[in-house]
Length: 115
Length: 115
Image (cartoon, each protein chain N blue to C red):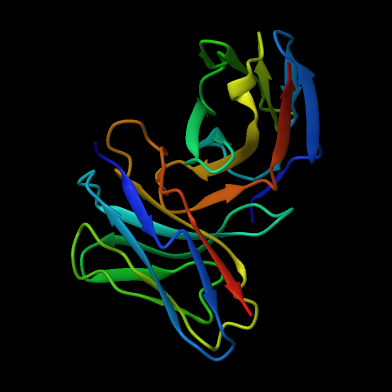
């Protein structure tokens, strides 16, 4: 089945450690996104990528890094510089307006807890 | 800047009844899209319904319909004949037309459908 796969589902990290969240899609979508979800807040955009080897900062990029070496993959690294990394992270993809404009396809999310 | 406000953090409805979730937004744009996304417990977020601002007719998708009041900047979601599977977080979202990388999400409404 086509979709977006995020791993791991749950992740615990010690302060000062970097951690990488995986996101893979087989929908052949050009655009991919990382969002952060906190209780009582809407989704906030961390990074997005419209095409391979290119990505742009979102609203809360500080303390995060990404890469887009393959169309299917858009991993997110939460670095030790991120001051409050405990959150639920959602990866999404879209067809950038082709087909149903504005439809985001989401993964199941990764919950990161910093101990 | 665009903002999206969902003033109901949590709502409950009896199975088979109708419920309306509220959303207001603020924008100076004239061409945009509005969305309702559903995030079931431990499952992927999916698109429920989409409204294009230039269309006066309210969008409907089976049991889901919207009341789009452009002048009032209001975009409520009505769920008819509520089912247990409708239990989820519902997010209202705004996107400028032709800016597919920038979504503005509300803080969400948790809907509980009771048997």
